[in-house]
Image (tube, rainbow, N blue to C red; front, side, top):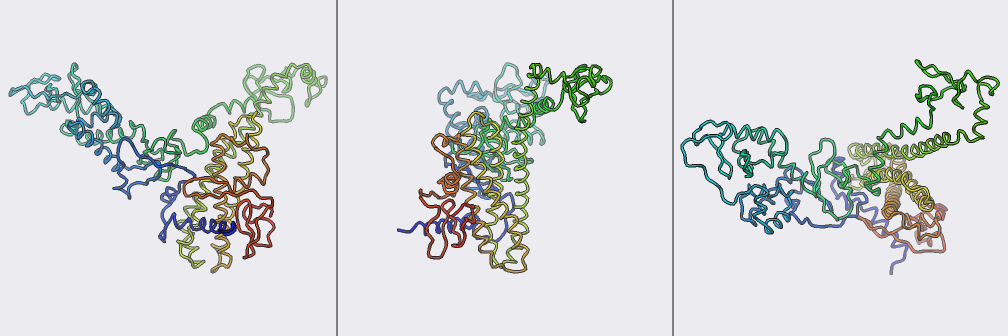
Length: 597
């Protein structure tokens, strides 16, 4: 049986080799979009199969990215899925492809729904969607009268739907063009005869519509597959034409499109795990609403006693003069007319009337409201500033990641005489930083809405958040500042392998911190009820070495010990109890997590 030290060393080696499993041995740099897309963050998806159709991902590997619980689709993929669904319905129900398309559009492209409704009551379905069981032919005449313009036209200048009502080609073209110009409602087009419910299919549109109208009509059909389908949504990224098909119930709602935009499939806002969609909606509304402006006005201004306009005091004197045309002069403290003030009321910097009234409780309600508004504003500002700071830090990290891939990695490879395939641990570190900044940003929204009276949960949350943020800062500093020394060196550096080990270790430890933070928040901080105390050592051990199963993660659980470090191994290193990092014998503090030996 292997010793704990050997197992820990093996786990560290496996972690440091993850980049080869993730990126392969290709020396060419992929662009930013592909790398971000390949990184799934902390999503813990379970594989599932679509119940309505077969995904074409086996035939189009180069067109879209397949994750464990969602598929990114381009327009070709969507068209292929539509054709497959139409073929399936046409074959099973023994109807034409045009009729199958009408049925699928009516039932939001759900194959199972079409089958259920059709076999339950075919006649009712036909009547509802306008499918006639028998096609009614043209009247047997050389000339026919158009039912719209009432002109008599030759038979070859007339056309009809399945119902047999004849209309001239010109009227049909105008009718179809008007419907298409009115929007997607043209997909439910019926016969122009007011008493007829027969559907007008895509075959007639292709036959009679202009080239531009046919293009728009086909575009509406394409978009209907995504917009009417309960499992598929367009990516909200700017200018993106990809759609994301989610296996409902298969795991997290956070998805990443091929355009590199990450978003929540459920609410279509940016990816916000571990915060729920309701909290995100409240937070975004609060950031954009006027309520905070009113809070600021209430906390930092007083109304003029005469015109009631809010006034901000920007000078030291208590003598306030309202702006024109009001020009009312009053005392800032008691809001009384300044003509009744002077030396006898305490001078320009005090007001005896105010002090006396305050002691009598006259101003208590107003002051309390103003103080509450000020406290509320300060609290909101505290969380918002940190939310926004992590957002900007994430944007800079994305820029650094892109620069790392396009410029620095090649330069570092030349300086350190190592192939780029052996430097992917740096890319993995930056990907981890980008994802952690996103998670950390949303934890501040979570903290803002955490009930004030739940002190234990609040303290536990702030501790978890602080530990994760501290780990992230160490990783960010190592990847950003320490890296520069090796990038700017004249030649191969002796300490580069130590840098590799340190950065890979920090990446692994930080990932553990954030996985445990995410898990704790998604569980509603339920652990706080079972934890007798939240000591630094105990919580650090749980954060840095806890077992969390996710994509590509491994169990890093540790058992309880009475000592703060493991036994020194034969190589003269001691393994940290909290993060399993192998430190040099002479170190008394873990180089990775800064815990005492």
